[in-house]
Length: 67
Image 1: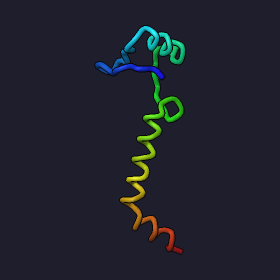
Image 2 (image 1 turned 180 degrees about the vertical axis):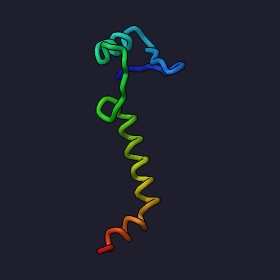
Image 3 (image 1 turned 60 degrees about the vertical axis):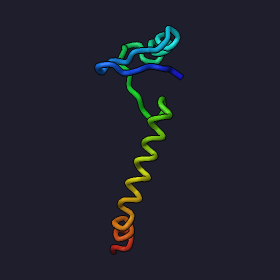
Image 4 (image 1 turned 180 degrees about the horizontal axis):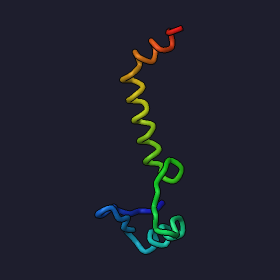
């Protein structure tokens, strides 16, 4: 796990080990988080999807019945 903070749009590693890992995973310096490399992001995507599903449940049920 890499620990870092974002400051003015730039990823700042918290330790020297974190810096080395960032360079290893993102050698061009272009850090791109996705659900494969960031479990927190994957969890948030799942949470947001569940919220949208709950908010739109009635509409989805109506669409399922529509022929």
